[in-house]
Length: 169
Image 1 (cartoon, rainbow, N blue to C red):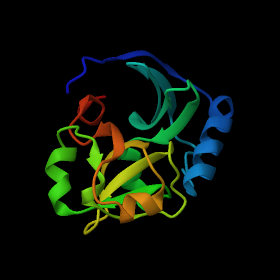
Image 2 (image 1 turned 90 degrees about the vertical axis):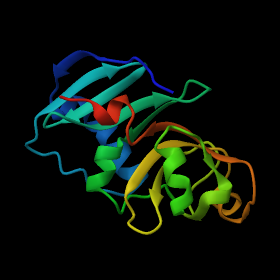
Image 3 (image 1 turned 180 degrees about the vertical axis):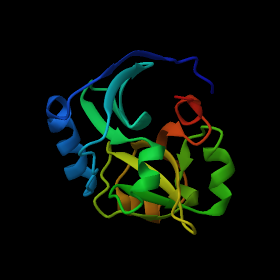
Image 4 (image 1 turned 60 degrees about the vertical axis):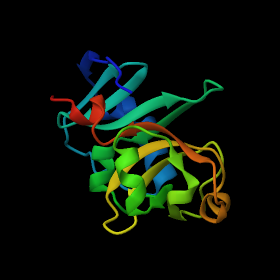
């Protein structure tokens, strides 16, 4: 599942220009990004818009199937905000599949933020160390993810080891 995406149109931006985008992200995930005084840039990465903070890709703006726009942290962003909302926890058996870009099956899900609804962007973490593994679109709500026994729970969008994760800036 490799994609030949590259970063294009990288440019510096002022905080006030992207403040609404950052504020939406902070409210959605219940976090404080702490970007005051940081060097902010925008770039395109494949079909996504990306926010770089001090030359590290911290957030992406993606579209769902209905072409609604959503902003979400990248996995590198979640490494600094492991208390963020919209999480789903998986067991050790799911990790090798997620690291190859596979969608997350609900058999491996052991916990989820109760605010997760169908169609939400969520981040997947391992249940032992709480480290981010992937982000994707939830195909059902938190209760169904936890209590279900088979089926696809999350359509993976970005994972540890993909082009965005491996990007050298």
